[in-house]
Image 1 (tube, helix red, strand yellow):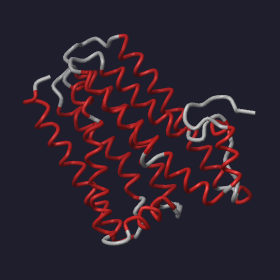
Image 2 (image 1 turned 45 degrees about the vertical axis):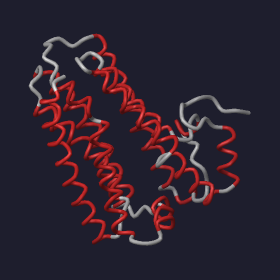
Image 3 (image 1 turned 90 degrees about the horizontal axis):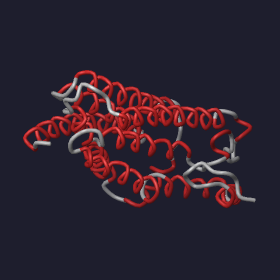
Length: 263
């Protein structure tokens, strides 16, 4: 892949998500809802995927496929987070923990945090540029496998989100731990399927020249989910709010990959 092609496309993508995150930061300043950045993550992935598909000069059918895949996935994720966490009056204690750690200059630190999200979006979507410049008029076996895994992952993530949202909306479940459906087999099935989506894009990208660059996306996402902003903050907050109930859930239930319960 020619860097003369990658760099201008990359800069266009960064300009898009940088501007979007700036607008979301302004929205946060007016609404005091910092969790709006979570919805921005999903929408940013959708917009940048569609942009790269539009700017690419590869086979049109492949560009339509990858643009549609990123649009469906990102808009679904962004819409779910927008309506449940922002408009749904959901209080996300993770941001309380961030502010407690920052102590001072919180609005400015949020601006940097939002732009960190923008940079992360650009880095993990490099493979979409490669895919959008693939001139082959025929989809390979790897691409069909990638589409299949992507479809399973989007369904799995949608189902797990719906199960958790239904559980939280029932007042009788206050203080309890969701072990409904997929949550009986994984403490974070939504995160697992999110990561699996990136694996689907990795397999899809391997069919394109320079597709090896896609290996960084699932690796980065796995690190973030397991060690940084995903599971650690979520579980720390769950233990604070649910105590021994959640500790027992931790003892019996797989943290990430869905698996059978421990006795």
